[in-house]
Amino acid sequence: MAEAVDDLRALERRDAELAASAQRLRELDAAVAAVRGRAEEIDAFFAAYPETENRLREAMLGAETELAERRLELEEAKAAVVDATNEDVREAAERLVRRVSDHVSVAEGRRAHTADALEELEQQAAALPDELPQLAARAENVTRELPGITTPEGAPRALIEWAGQAHASLFVATGQLDSQRERVVREANELATMLLGEPTYGSTPAQVLARVTSDERRRQRR
Image 1 (cartoon, rainbow, N blue to C red):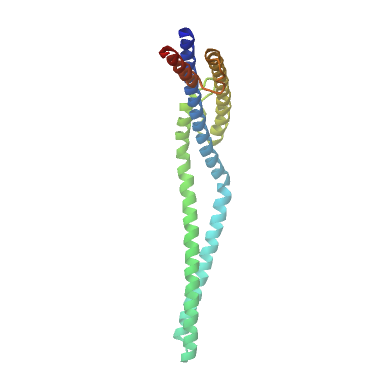
Image 2 (cartoon, rainbow, N blue to C red):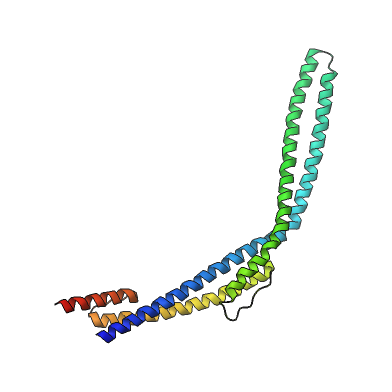
């Protein structure tokens, strides 16, 4: 009995070791996914950048043209107020000034919004390349724990390709550890079932060890 309990303890330790190793691989895989996700975002940004920049610059030109036209209309409307020959004409001209002033405000807002969007685009285009060395460093940290995987270059496509290879390697390694754990769990349950005289299948090695040692203590107290 004592020897069997020692075997269960060894299986429990082995299961814990395998569980810790599998958890580490899953943590590495999460790190790989994070690098890949950000690299894909950066790659997509620069793929769309020329079209986006062109669209925003055209929108900016249109907004500036519209604003200039609205301001000219406002000057003409104000001049009409000055030139009004009677009160009715003056009131009509003042109403036109208010309407055109609203149009100017809308055009100014559109221009400001487009300018902000263009500035944000340019800021991103300038800042995103600075992230790539950091992503490469994070990838290298993972690579150190993955035999057969080379450190990627600090370019979006290279990082994406590396992430695919790293994930595949981690998937296989995690599957192997899970298979080993299944064998350990099965062996522990078979041994515990034999000792207890009742099935324990589905229990972890730690659980079956606890049941066996608890049963042994009860027997010793009798």
